[in-house]
Image 1 (cartoon, rainbow, N blue to C red):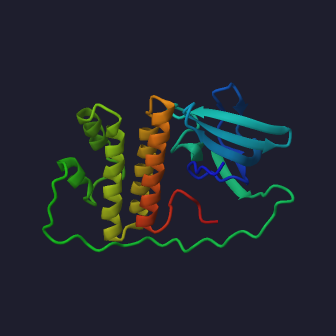
Image 2: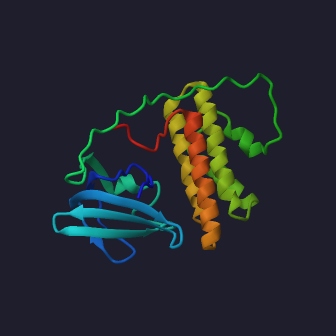
Length: 224
């Protein structure tokens, strides 16, 4: 289970910050502790799966991808505090030294450069305004009445990430990166069949990998 879900990392202690009940009726309360031993995304069931090892035994948790509340993509930090590394007993090994986390600053766009992209996408390249462009999200969803709208929103935030990279604003570039990835998860989660789910999930993962290469590192993983 190598899937990355928000800040969560396998073989790390976790503390429950807020009480929740998963899709199978399992309830964990604030203050409970354990070790995250597995995390995955089930494409067929369209759900997030976590496995936590506790003193009284392991518990398997299931969360629908489209859940409107509770633990879900983009909100795991509200429910789980990530603690120290905790390898499986007997499997301890030296931890790799992470590569330097340095944002790539691309070459500035040529002055007066134009393109044929939609007006909302060109506006997204501005460094003005809040991190989350909710009005633009709604505009795109109105104009694109299909699942491709979510992918367009993801690309909008990728465009915004690039603008902040060129401006040297790493904090806001990271915020845009995370929103782009989050919307691609939404896009992949709208698949209506197993085959389509596999195709969209592959597209999502390739989009994420491309952003990492462009950014210089992956802001959705912690440097530990």
